[in-house]
Image (tube, rainbow, N blue to C red; front, side):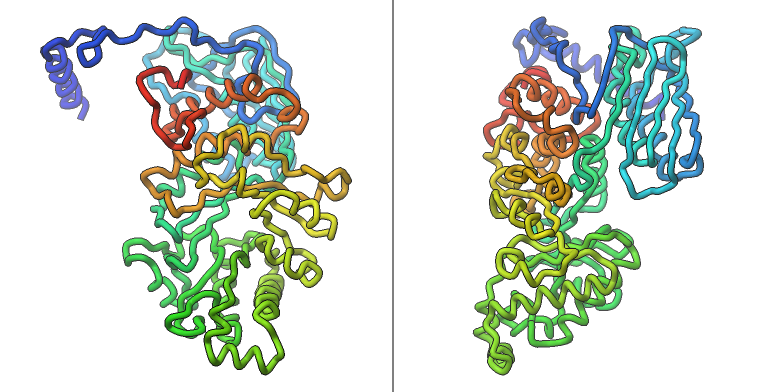
Length: 516
């Protein structure tokens, strides 16, 4: 209630003014630091993250009408996805609520948005023209997602002037032509090691869009817990930590791997890997994929296949007997399990994604549509694409966010096409993924563990290679990344200081976000 809120605020001000030793220039009895005059942006840099493919700019400052109109043309006119995005970015750009300035006209009053295709699956090309004169800016894109990425760029160009209390665009006119370098720009989150509430996952997804990451790899289940509801097998989620740490079908976004019915296990004391000797195991896998495909009709499905310890199969009598009858080793059984799971996925029009161990062990046997997910170390993607398969890079030494001692510059320098010179093979690297494994991350610290380091990889995956390579990133990228970290903070994302020795630690003392 406004009147009560105002009353409490007035009482709070009086209370502060009466505290012993308090004055507006003191903090805890000490003189508050003055604004550091040395905190100035390097005007030779463009403070957009990630950097666009091509851009030109001028030297004018434009005011933006708080009643900015969005005029849709072409295939995007009736898109609910685009409509929601426009409203979301309006709230981001005009997040400060101020009184009317009394200005009768503004330099920029309308965005004309033209979408060429009604395809809602591709990223497309964005072309943004923000003139120095006139009231109309124009966005052109192949798809609605090209427009949405363009809106993110536009929102980063908009800054709030605290003196005039108006939104401004500096360095107009702007001309930007942009497109992603890789189609797959992913972030893995892990809810099997620590449960994450749905609203936290939504916050992560929102933050991904600010850095133009476009794939959420949701590692829902593992041996530690199975928190997902699967209608065909309703007892599976009895494997969750507690009944309060579960995802309903309505909550679910994407399922990665699964386990939980007793008959899936080799024995009650031996629960990993699943029982390779029973058809029931594969019936459950098929049921899980069918249930998830009804809800989320995405192409890629991650079937895992990493770090398999087959000792369990040898120590379980009926599985050992099954192997002996077929003259199979545990290595053979591993191959049999992965390939049968791939057949199930392919039969349901899903593209199988497997960790690199499958490629390292039986590359020639993998389904020809397999996407190999590199994680163990460098040099894997060159071997994968040489065999004609596609690859996703997630080198754990550089792109595993749970490795808290990996600095931002290591993520930034990590190149998905390293060692791949053939142009046709380069196209088989569909992108990369930073991985936020959940052993030491939960709701309390996941965002500051992800950000801002994930943004370093995001620019590598979006911007041209010549833009992100060759020069000293401490002079060309660090100031922009620090600025982007503060932008995330302003948008409510708990991004940690960029140059902490250990990621996700708070600031060491008082000071500006831009100087941490």
